[in-house]
View 1 (cartoon, helix red, strand yellow):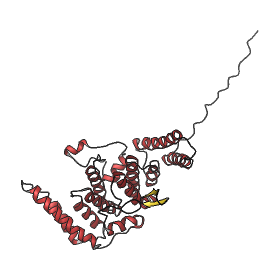
View 2 (tube, one colour; view 1 turned 180 degrees about the vertical axis):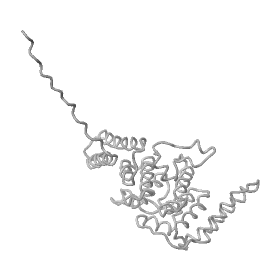
View 3 (cartoon, helix red, strand yellow; view 1 turned 90 degrees about the horizontal axis):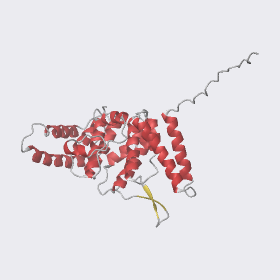
View 4 (cartoon, helix red, strand yellow; view 1 turned 60 degrees about the horizontal axis):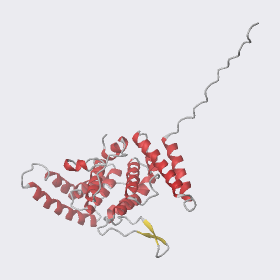
Length: 307
């Protein structure tokens, strides 16, 4: 007798689902965030924490892989951290939205003033543009956080509140240009008397710049870039806040050094408030105070103008 023949049929393995794009991964994670946030009153704190942690892990993984490339992707990523009042998540929100804004995302440019306000409030400072709100137990409604005792200038605040539609002026301010040139000249040909003279000159330049701010005499990308350059040679956090605000306007308007000035002024602001710098622009002993986590090569390119 012959053994019966066996019919062998090759069964193909199940097809793999196509990999999700970064934007799709972010959209799913943020949707889960919003769904659990809507159920905060009934969901357990553990369930809420798990969803938030997952969405942030998605963003961290994409940043580590340098998978986020577009303004829209960075803006979406910022939403994973937005449901917080703490410094570190709000720092992530601001850095991601700033990257998105400089990549041209309109939503990020609209949201950026509030992201900046919320960040400085989380540090313990007054807000700059009046966009950050909190719940008041006295009134039972939303109220703005206190404003900075040294507020941003009107011309800078106006520019920030219209970042989505900002257009540069046509005529560069020659005095601000001259002040910026003097600022750089003071930093060449050092001798033992240079630091003291430079400190006094820096203060005089900032005092004159304050008068120019008051007159609203900044209109071009170069004006804001020059003003930021002068202002970032400051003494206190408010100096660096204003420098950074000028730098952001300059970068949005495509000033030649606007991007690099964004990271320099931001690092100086953070260090001046007792926090670690993020882009390593401050050298010497300040290199020890550098938080390198979750900054992608694309962010470095956008915010520093080099890899």
